[in-house]
Amino acid sequence: MAKKTSAIIDEVFAELSSDKRNIITNYLTLLFKWHKSNNIISSSDNEYVIKREIYDSYQFSKIITGATFTDVGTGGGIPGIMVAILKPDKEIVLLDRKSNFIDFLEIVKHDLSLKNIDIIQQDFFDSKFQLNTEVALFKNFSNKKIAKMDFEKKLMYMIGTARCSKSVKKVYMLTGTPVLELSKHFVEDYTLTVKKISSPFFDTSRYVAEVLL
Image (cartoon, rainbow, N blue to C red; front, side, top):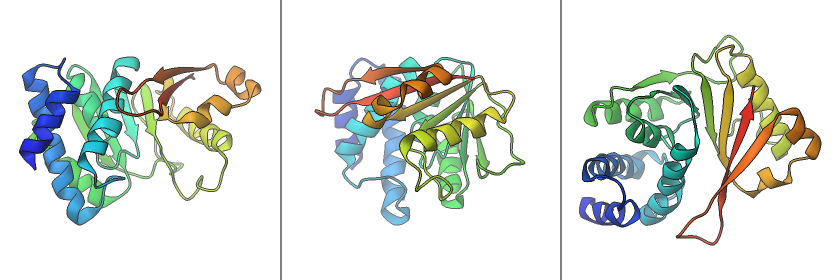
């Protein structure tokens, strides 16, 4: 498993230093092992996860700007762990309400010696909770409160919740084509900009939406 993961990492991230590739390999080895018994990522196809989720997170990390970030609903740490690895001078908070994710992230933090991350178990939609970072990050984030909403209303609700935290100045979302279908009124009201992540591995692309608060 580790050898195969390492080979794929070397192929996908050839431009990174060997030290960075080794850290990413160690993270994914833990992620895939934990997934077998805890089902914490969207696919059991390791190559797909690397070439889709991890590669897109890598490109995402090159687009986002700021000094402190909260990865909301981080799950297994995608994209927050990648941001922490690739931006060691930045502070990353990994936020999730589920204990099995938190337990896994604590192991990753310890085993990878990631000094720039904090891990918080909390419901983002708890009205008493406040983010304490400059930037909020979302990736395919869902919750029972927003699950039945259409994409625009869902995004509006998430941005509104982030705005309740006075420290948050920007929101980024790594998402798919629905972001291209947002109404002109929404885009203008939220000063929303969109950047495309082109994939060398898939015909479909993902997009990064940025909202200034």
